[in-house]
Image (cartoon, rainbow, N blue to C red):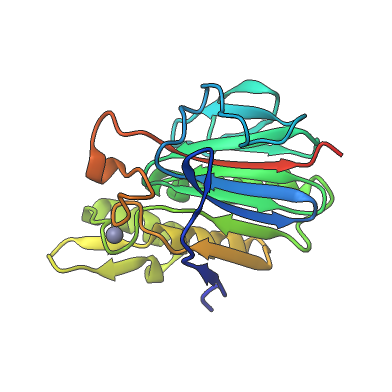
Length: 234
Ligand SMILES: [Zn+2]
């Protein structure tokens, strides 16, 4: 059965001059920042994070490696999980899928491109989160990523993602090459691991130059959209 997904296509608000989409659950705040977001390890403009919340980031390598969150640089991996308050788990992306997850006991941020989907970064992050009191009442926000409209891939890549997340992730495009719906693939993996509520920002990075960075559209030197989630300082 396909996962049930709530689709959000709202225009962003503007936070410190940056397009932003904000969500809340269990006292946690999830924030997606689009075009104009600073580099992941640069100082954030005032007004992005509340006082007492420190950003935490990764050196992302398209792996299935989940790290515990500390303030600042956390090391090499593609997901951050924490039960602590006051730490903003952050991932950077420009077409890959950013996923922010909240349960009553923890928050997690995941960077999932096709390699991450195939390697299982989403279930790996959820397994780590379940150690903080389970996944019951969990909610996941699937952020802006390249849509099936624009994500043309080779047969080998399509086969790897279909193997990991089912045939529904493959879509036919205008040309002969397959297209992939990576956000759908992530939703399949979230639902399979027991996340009850999945909210998907149905915005294609490549189709929305006014709001979002896209590596396929902007090429090398392209900026990164930032996705952050934190539990309030208490
Ligand atoms: Zn598109």
